[in-house]
Length: 245
Image (cartoon, rainbow, N blue to C red):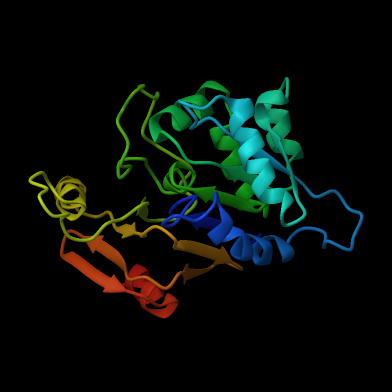
């Protein structure tokens, strides 16, 4: 079975409304897998709000629901289900929001749904994530930007793609910043984990996997990092060649 994933860097870009920049991409992505707007089929998506920390799950669900309603989909959060595993089993699409990646992964372990999400997505269920929701699609969360506010049982994540993901990637150093740059932090990771690869996706961009083919979505330069250094890319073909190499 082929996997279908849409992994967005962020929920906003510049001063746009929540998820508004991504709605055309999400619409196209879901159109390939779920009933059309003219069909009376079920268009409810399962939302996982576990990355929310300073926002409660009801508030998070309402915010995501408002965005998806604009493209004809309804959202139901997993926290309303008495059995989280059954909720994953019944989901026709899984949506995972951003927030704190450590909290997100911890809750996925706590509710025993991490392995089940992986199985569902690998059997063809569409997956949409942004920020933390994209970071967990990689083998581990070791390239998150977030503070470790909780300690998950493991850093091992969904492993739906073979490479690490760094959302909100910023190249270079902001004026007046004297700490490590994002590139330096990721090179620290790669110095220890020499065989790993990292894809840094700037805000407003994302990664699409459809029919097991990886594509880059966006009009900004993104970056592929390995123990050998950093390579810029801005097309899907370049990205596929880098991953394959």
